[in-house]
Image (cartoon, rainbow, N blue to C red; front, side, top):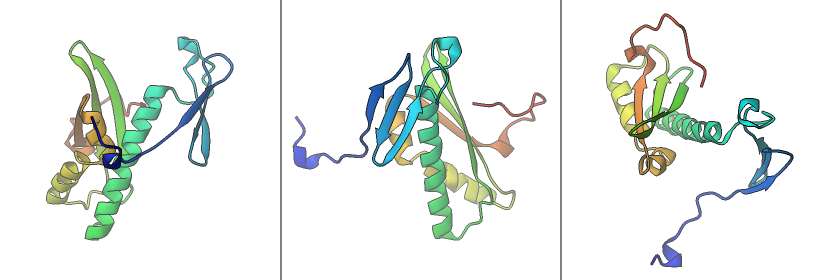
Length: 149
């Protein structure tokens, strides 16, 4: 059993049901709506729970990498984090692709990948699912264009 003094509250939210599948989410002083797409019985008034999960992971990744780069005085340019949550027979996994300025060296990119693997939300989620992270410039060219996620 865990001692209460060993516990640290990382986040809290209150979710109240609305019309249909719409959910009203309050966390701290922020409020927003979560919902399911119409195809899944919702009204699509807000992001679906898995979309919120990917938004949380991507935000944590971007914030952590930006803070690290600022500390090192590295210019990342415009950092973009693209994520996909994929269900496979073996379980769920996340593909996370980082994109930043071409001026970021291969050594800096390698270090940023190490840091991305250690972000707080990554560590929480990786206890339950596998998260692959790579830079966009290391992907083979895709003739179909960027994928929305």
